[in-house]
Length: 143
Image (cartoon, rainbow, N blue to C red; front, top):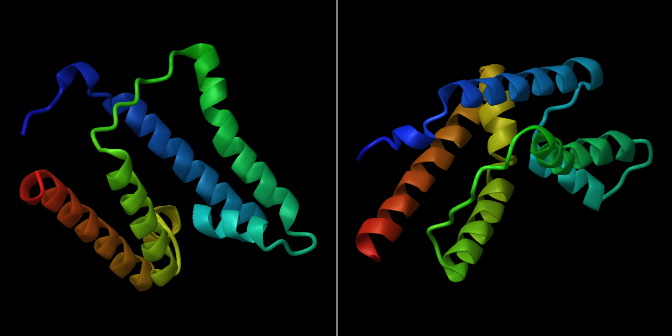
């Protein structure tokens, strides 16, 4: 394995991680909510009165952020090295895993680990191991 030094962006990645951490901490501090994307989006699909506004603004921020970024710098090129069938299967597996894990990688991996939640530690380890296994199978067994 080699590092693509032309596209190695530690400072930009660090800044993005800091912004995600600050946003997650602010949501927890000011709203008492965990910044788990699947739970936030799921709450919009099953709306509860008085709980829609902040969820809609959160999702709108996820969609607007790349558009704002594009005002200051070009968006990075996206290169997906998988076929449509692989992407569909992967998406379904992530959805099933999110349901069984009672949360997504943002809820468990960012917020849960920061709170030292044992359940989130197990869920994040399971997400990572499943990801490693899938990449190995797709790239080395099925290739």
